[in-house]
Structures are given as structure tokens and as C-alpha cells.
Image (cartoon, rainbow, N blue to C red; front, side):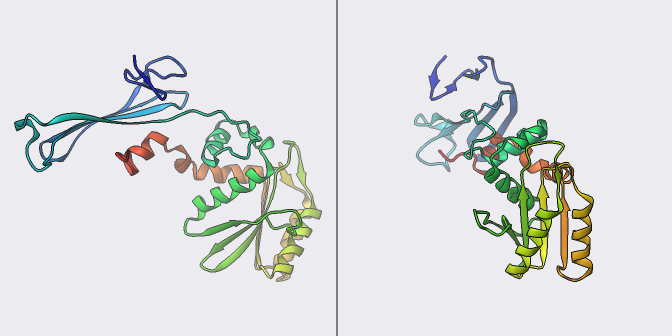
Length: 252
């Protein structure tokens, strides 16, 4: 068994010490006379490797089997595991979305800035052709994200509550509406990890629209937000080895 930077030739995961299952075995002939063998192995812990065998020579247009100078080459790609804590700002958003789909309660422990990044990432996937700018800072006036669709901006407020039983009150909704009016933005979305909004908060949001103070204003509690995550789950579910194999297969 030869270990080179975490790669084991016989496909043994360096972390679990077991042979990683073959998740893809594909024979390709992209160039005449150059058979290619592709292996992709993925362990349950997340470690993966891709191996490609091919026959190459000075002239790729000549059948390599007829020449002594033909030789077998092998290219490798592999994943390296890294452990993150929920509070880490370096936590990749894709990894966070996968973790939340299995353990939703982790949302109460992530960094508030990471929560803003998570909302931005989910909104990009859900809406599609849009731009999302993260602007939440101390003294931002209550607007954390600006989502732009066809030059039309929408303000987004993000609140990460630390208790599953939390209720989002009316005061935060009022502050957000005021921040929107000061910025001249007429569309708003309030996203919270609280269990639900208070009755007064819902009334204020409805009144703001009915009186034409804003053209659109939505309240999204934890349940609605996780429904949105699940609606875009296919994007987060794409395995890392699949991304390398299908989108950038042989870059070395």
C-alpha cells in the first residue's frame, strides 16, 4: 500500500481504513486508439478519489497499440477531509447545507455571519438569475442582504436565534421596515431561525403592504426557510467527486 498525500493506490480510505466503494466505473474512448479507464471511489466519511488510466504517445492521432513508445499514464484527484465546528467562519456553505439537512438544530450554533452567507446561497439557488450582496455590518440599519432581480432590489434581514422555541417579535419587523424606507427599497424579506413570528409582527407586515408603504414584504420563519433549503437540496447533494469528474475531469 503506497500512501501519497492521502492517496492509497488500493482505494483504502486513510481515515476509516476500509476500502472505499466504487461509485463509478466508466470506460471512455475520447480519442481513437486511446482507451481510458475511469474509477471513482467514495467513502461514507466523505473522502473520495478519482483515478484515470490512459495510453499516450507522441502523436495522439496514431493507434498507440502499434508503437513501442506508447505508455500508460495515470492521473489522480482525491478529497481531503477537514473538521469544522459549527461556529467556524471558515465553514464552507455547501458543507453547512449538507449538515443542516441531516441535523437542523445545528443552525442555532453557527456564526451569525455564516447564517447570512447561508441565506444568500440558498436564495441564489432558489431564485436563479439574481445577485445577492452581503452588507450586514454593525450599524447597517437592519439590512443584511440586498437581492437584485432584473435591476429590482429586495432587502433581506437575517436573524439567527439560539433557541428553538424563540418567537420573532414585532419590534425587529418595525426596525426592518424603517430601514427599508430610509434606503428607498420597497421589497423586503425577513428570515429568522425563530419558530414563528408573533401575531403583532404578522399584522404589521400585512398593514405595511396594504397601506402601500412597501410593495412586497414576506416573513420567513425557521420552518419556511428549511423548506427552501430542501427545495434546493439537489444542488447541495452533488458529490465533490462528481463535480471534479463531470466539470473538470482531467485537470492536473
